[in-house]
Length: 590
Image (tube, rainbow, N blue to C red; front, side):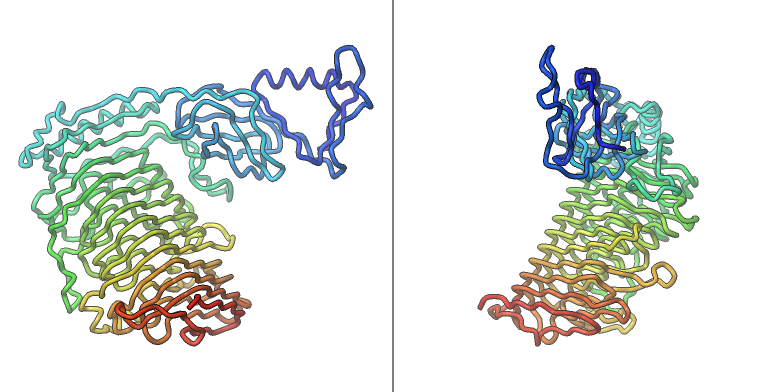
């Protein structure tokens, strides 16, 4: 589009005034030139007002409809120059948005936004609307008490059917986009012998496999949300061997259906008497062909007096089949299903297998997965505290502020994501704290970014691993491990790996390698300000053949031989490097 040229500047500015009146906005980067608005009855002095000369970009403008809406409602923004938009905000609060075309964006009013300007950022600059968007109060949600549907809440009467009936009523109300709540009574214990089967949510503008961008999950309408409000109530499982979860999707879920728009808040889950014959879950269980989107689980505690099998020495751990949160996909064609916008926060989960497991099969797309401020305690054999990924295609996953203990496998296992953040986490009595694998592949072909920051390891692993069973392979306490699933990535690439502000010690595992073990191909490795309690080789980094020269930066790290010794600077001789690399090594101050 050529630069703006309009010799009748009075007509131009009248047109701009009309546009502004309907909420449009225009911005010009510093390189633009435009005819100045004239004073009344007089020509513009000099005819133009010019910025510093440069290649003139196009003028970008936008208007929006409707002018008001509640959080989670959609706003259509129309204008030009939207391709490449990087951010949309409502009065400064970032919004989920989709660039449908160069002249249209669909944005979702973010929760927490207040009335104010809409701003759009593109490579050309940031434009702010001339008029305010009015944020309205969310529509009042209908509440459906399980007690009103016959739940006794006495811990012995089976309340499964009453909870199902209350949920069905809430889901029916939410089918038109209105919120609804399934209410439980604080202090009561609701006994369940059968699952509550979740409905598929409304069809909407979901992931389209023919479109590589915009971002996965950004086009989903946030409406019709059902909240299960525990308010301190307890869900108690029956003493039997059945495989079920009190909240679960039908099995198998129907291909193409989407499950979610769900909030689970404020429950205690008593699963102490369970002994299922195969893997299931205790908080939420979704598996099969369906999509999963927009699930929030918060303030949930699972009881902690399950039998602790961590001290077994033979690897034969019975009753290891109960996960906390389990969302898994079935083997369906590429891009047929996706798991997006799933958040688990402020939970205390004791499980016999994974506490949080979000795994998609056959290239299921996974994005915007988050676990924050959770405590996990895992009592089973070969079950990571948290597992995300493969075989699937991952975009973004974050684990922040969590405390993971007593896992006979990994603290956090993440398979094949473009953006990985593990920050502020503690790991105790685990075979290895962090395991990054390539059973799956990143969703995008861009270089992945992996950040491990402010993470800490302590304690010995279980006796089974201390004996050094060969089938377990060589491991490291904080190891980002590299394993490739042939046929998914050729070759796999870790991208840019940053590890900083981490501490830890050898965990007694007899097949110990080194505290940090990273094997390529990688684009860069940075390790800084870490304190390591270990002996022998403490950092091992290897770039594979054909992957290019790997730049390695190690700065400000310290070491000690035991927890009773003082720290001294880590030296290059404490590290091992292989393959093609360059090294920048700065020791810590003495």
